[in-house]
Image (tube, rainbow, N blue to C red; front, side):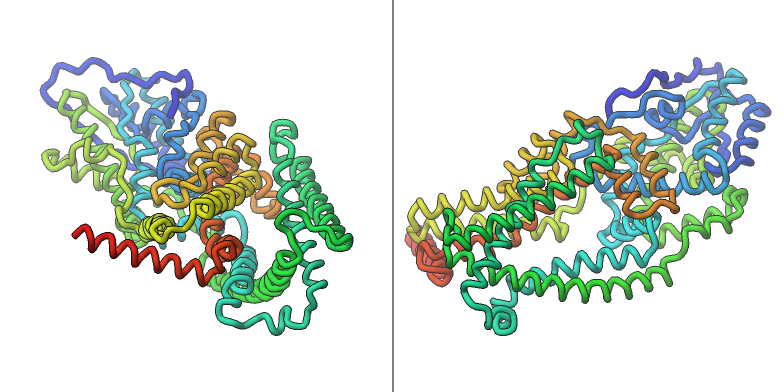
Amino acid sequence: MSDAGEADVPEPPAPPDRDRGSVEVLGTAHVSQASVNEVRDTVEREQPDIVAVELDEGRYRQMQGGTPDDIEAEDLLSGNTVFQFLAYWMLSYVQSRLGEQFDIEPGADMRAGIEAAEETGCGVALVDRDIQVTIQRFWSRLSFTEKLKMIGGLALGITDPRTIGLTFGAIGGMVLGLLVAVFLAPLFGFGDLLLVGSVGPATLRYVGSGAVGALVGAVVGLVFLPSLESTGGYADGYLSGFSMRILAGVLLGTVGGLTLVATGTFVGPFSAATLENAGTYAIRGTAGTLAGLGVGVSVGAVLGLVLGAFGGDVEEIDEIDIEELTDGDVVSAMMEEFRQFSPRGANALIDERDAYIAHNLNELREQGYDVLAVVGAGHRAGIERHLRNPGDIPSLESLSGTASSSRFSPAKIIGYLIMVGFLAFFFLLIMAGVRNAFLLKLFVAWFLFNGIFAFTLARLAGARWASAGVGGAVAWLTSINPLLAPGWFAGYVELKYRPVNVRDIQTLNEIVDDTERPLGDAIQAMFAVPLFRLIMIVALTNIGSMIATALFPFVVLPWLAPEIGGVDALMGQLLQGAQNSLELIRGLL
């Protein structure tokens, strides 16, 4: 995080002349007026040397009216930090929603402790761990299923389960139907009879030229969108311009493609045979997309009903007696429920912070201070347990570092397999003696195919030209390296022009909390928030590269393979390369 605001971090007063002080832990509910009153009364009654609050420096500065922390590129774009901010958003949203339900500002108990300390002349100490460290360690401990549940819970705050089910079902069905119809059906030898068996070559040329023209026109329209600065961001004008340019590009491209066929003119690689193949793919793709849409909507509707039946209702917050949140039994039950959801996540979010706060409180006690610690009720029992046995408190070093993600996660394993396969593919072709010209064309095709997909989806998310260009330029390399992603590079460049700060999370909470707003308007408003837009740029750039990597063997290789005799000949060259490699190894041994 960068420097934030003008609020100075409080310094404790000089240590009193006593060998050892004391610590009293006051458990509060962060959204309870009764807790605010209790904090003020306790500080005035006890007159401690120091009031210790469950805050870190960044949250303290923000609470005191300082400028929100700008999120630095290295903070946001390292590893899974984008997803960590989603977790931070989720937790912030829950607390914000509770605060709104009970008409009190979240964190009012901490503010009351600070103000009461200042009024009575007590010192103030910040004893909590940095929130970014906590969120990073929390996210790294969650399993893949738990992460999906958290993000799903945030989505349920935006709209109802049926809308979510229908939306994801429709999108997933269309994508799956397109992939099956265009790429998998031909491999199993079915689909052509009903789809294109009775269509003549001339019709296929018209269909193919129209489809290619529409695709090229859409990409050109997307690429030449006006910059966000010239239109004031994702306002109505930008979205209207976005839609109109895409539509105009599709119409002009379609007309242009049909004109080429009507006049008998074919440009560059778009020969008659190529357009006929494109027409076949277009017919298959359209049929598969429509079929997938129908199946996806049906499945999504069922999924939405299931989520609605078992997913609960956010309005049930009203049934909680907020004053009971400071009761030990109630808090213990809530903590136990969270541990059942994610034991490892609870360790990072609760247990480690208990130990961290207890360590700081014990240090103040050993320096002779009498301390009143104002903490959330869920931390009270753990902190007091550590304070009774200070020798068993873990070191700050073990609690402060960022946690590394799993060394052999499924995603990384798949990434390594793709990298090994890519390198082995080129190595075997080299060992087979394939001429350099073909290898160069293959590499250029890989570079362009990945770059175009990553660049186009980055622009679709609203990336600047420079950001999308960088993401597209590195996509060929990052798509074969499981430790890199083009979205990180695109996001890094984007942050140079567009600052993002933690206040964006509160803005997103306000948008999500407006349940009266239509879903389309909510999404539009979320895109106007720099943090959300940056997350979408990073995500869509990565998705573009992933799609290109998955489609390359099915789309590009069959197009280039005829130069060396077709796909069968290409497979033969790979086998020959493997045999030559074995002979070389045998000779060396």
